[in-house]
Amino acid sequence: DAKTTQPPSMDCAEGRAANLPCNHSTISGNEYVYWYRQIHSQGPQYIIHGLKNNETNEMASLIITEDRKSSTLILPHATLRDTAVYYCIVYSGGSNYKLTFGKGTLLTVNP
Amino acid sequence: GAGVSQTPSNKVTEKGKYVELRCDPISGHTALYWYRQSLGQGPEFLIYFQGTGAADDSGLPNDRFFAVRPEGSVSTLKIQRTERGDSAVYLCASSPRRQGGELGQFFGPGTRLTVL
Image (cartoon, rainbow over all chains, first blue to last red; front, side, top):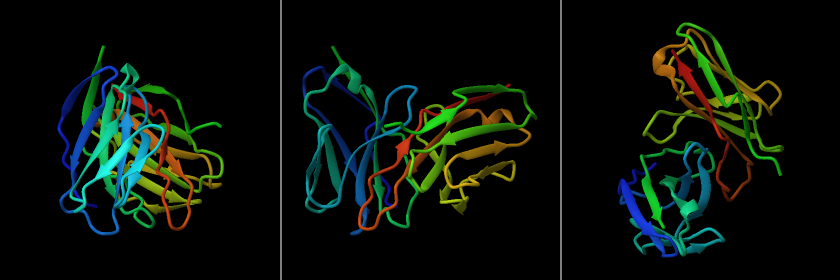
């Protein structure tokens, strides 16, 4: 799986949008971009994934650049409960079942 | 519905002892994964089951680690002759299998293992 690069930490004010970047310049054509988050003392939680098109669900939006070399996870109205480590993972799924986690980005939402 | 559950939530043991960690996946999920997470790091893959068989155990650090899933649902991770370096959070995840898509893996809360 392609390697990802994320900033180690970010801060965001409560109620504002949190934009978390991820670089994955070596991504292959069949690889998806997945985002998970891990709230303190809990297991990782799936947020969203995409291949080429931008995606939105009830939790977040995922913007993937046209060349697919980077992406941004957007939490539109961050709350204190969104404070967590956010992991960007490139994953081909199917027969490739391993999730390879980096160190992620610690997002701290401040009141 | 019920998520992935893991027991115990915390386990403290002494160096050299044997421990078993249990994972109950989401009902109907045929794929099951174990990961290990050390302090300040992301989870690291240990082993993957598809049904009852271990399809990939390449992440197990050495032969002191073993995992089973005899009936294709509950899984047990077994660690023999524990060492202080085995101290970590052990995470279990499960997922349904379907062609043409991937819904992501569903993680349990983990078992925090401390080897004294």
